[in-house]
Length: 270
Image 1: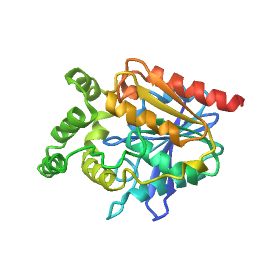
Image 2 (image 1 turned 90 degrees about the horizontal axis):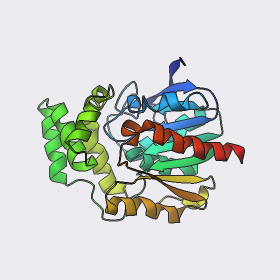
Image 3 (image 1 turned 180 degrees about the horizontal axis):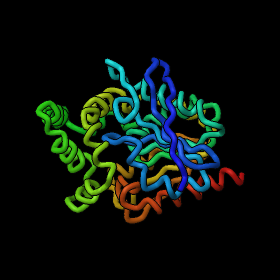
């Protein structure tokens, strides 16, 4: 059984960012989405670690990472750039959902970038609203009242689109505890995306290959948004995960790992 070690990287503002590292081979930096921590990748890591060095961060404000008094989405990007610089290069970067937004903004600033994979995450169309402010207010009220799990369930149903069976399956995972612990970060991230979600990225500076992952059952509007990002990159392909929605890392880890290994393998061969 491969051992996992936790290392800490200081971000630009001094915030300590925890990185959980497992395996041997090319470096893969994984950036998780909203309402999660590094444990969201627990089912994927064993499938990748035999051939890759998998480094999963705890994004700021959760897990073993620190936080700052004031939240700024730009600091999340700084965190990813700092961690990538600390890993043996070249570095493959993977971002899921909100983590994809962070990864996309970080990519032009990572000089040792080997490839970039975005799973249903990236810059948003101008004017797009992921969640009404009233819903975020309701989440904040639930968290303030100590109803953290209820807040997380509401987010998973309304924003992620999980049906009752999908929600029950997610709650059965060991990573659910970390999601509950991170629930207070949901509203700050979605509010920040409401302001900065359409901020441009100098994608012309990303010369590394890019893979866009989309779920085959993802609703048509969101899927069109994610697939439209292909036009922003020089070397890009879109890979559909059949039968999956937004959380293949939980529902079908073998499928996600296979897509990553095939993509990274082609890059290494090239």
